[in-house]
Amino acid sequence: MREGSLEAPTRHPVAWQDEAFYDEVNLDTELRRVFDICHSCRRCFNLCDSFPRLFDLIDDSTSGELDNVASSAFKSVVDACTLCDMCFMTKCPYVPPHEFQLDFPHLMLRYRAVEHRKGAVPASARAIKEIDRNGRLAAPIAGLANWVIDERNEVTRPVLQKIAKIHREARLPRFVGKTFVMRARDDRAFIDITAPAYGRKAVLYATCTVNYHLPSVGAATRKVLAANGVETEVVYPGCCGMPQHEHGDLAKVAEAAVRVAEAMAPWIDRGYPVVALVPSCALMLKFEWPLIVPRDWPAYPLVDKLARATVDVSEYVVDLARTAGLAPGLKPLDGPVALHSACHARAQNMGQKAAEMLRLVPELELKVIERCSGHGGSFGVMQDFFEVAHKVGKPVVRQALASGAPYVVSECPLAGLHIAQGMERQTDRESETPPQAGSRGAGLHPIELIARAYGLDET
Image (cartoon, rainbow, N blue to C red; front, side, top):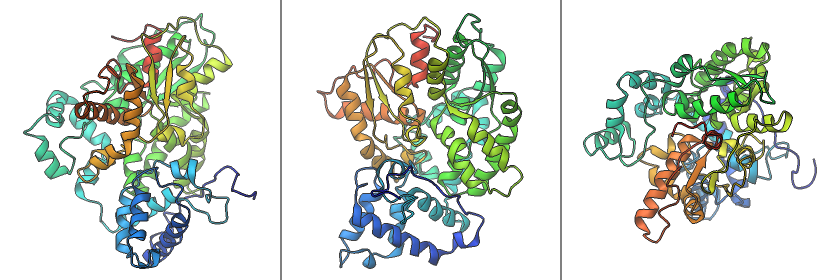
């Protein structure tokens, strides 16, 4: 090991089937070991609210050290972690293979797994994480469901806050009556046989967000790939389990991994790469699932095969451009773009693929924002964390507004929604803020701008 822990960070399997994993005395010992290291370093103070909470607990103690902080206070630190992985990937000098073996996000995951086993996860959180069930129930009544969840609805949102603990002002993704999978069955994209990449094939993992809420992202992806000669199939065996992951239900995550891996295996065997449309889902397929599914399970080889075959949508388009060349036809957009580089895209350790993809558009003026949006899955919409999430995301909002760009896009649809609302909140409070920023594209996915540059968008 070289000085400064300059090696690439590595992760160990999550031992959630081991009874010692749930030993609360052992967990407390590990929390104190890691928190003491964090306290002595503090490089991560500006990443999220977990670290300021931890440091405040220590600084406000009678000794100014961790030994005078009650273990019961650690829950506030754990609750503020969004599992974004940025401390592990970009800040911490003590991650494996360093001898300290510090993996803060997975320690927070372990704490939540213990809480989940004890039945400490609230019923409201358990209901929210059932994404597929909620999407299936809402789709047939999408209009009514969207009226209920509209943040401007002064009748239903206070009730939703009281029952589900979702902040009454939090903007929630709208439901669609016709899912992306349903639309894909009815709409076969025209394949350009003259494109340089003609003959390639890919299977799109729809993801719950795109399937139930944002089919426009999936449609844009199919159109862009078809224009480049790539034939696509849309497959959605179910949610990747990220909502269960953030609440410590690791058995459910493992079940989701096996289910999806088994469904994708025939496509992979036929040479299809698996293109994930949301970075959080790509991160689960690529990195988290092989660490959570036990290696002695019969399905583990399928999970590992899927991990190796999975690419993020921006990563795939950039690879097309490099290896085959993109089809001609990209035209300049009608204004600059501010791109939020999502944490779960950065955690894939693949570089700024969304930025690389957007720079394929001629004459593009691009501003890249590498800060956390603060949303963090369901964290950003919950009653207890909504304002914290907007506080964490304020630097992103300020940079987006300062750019004046009419297009403010994010690889993460939930982050994009959160940033768009933050921009509106900031504009309302500061009248001098340029109102035109994000006026034509706040909350879009970068692939939608590529479709627009090709003249393939539906607007």
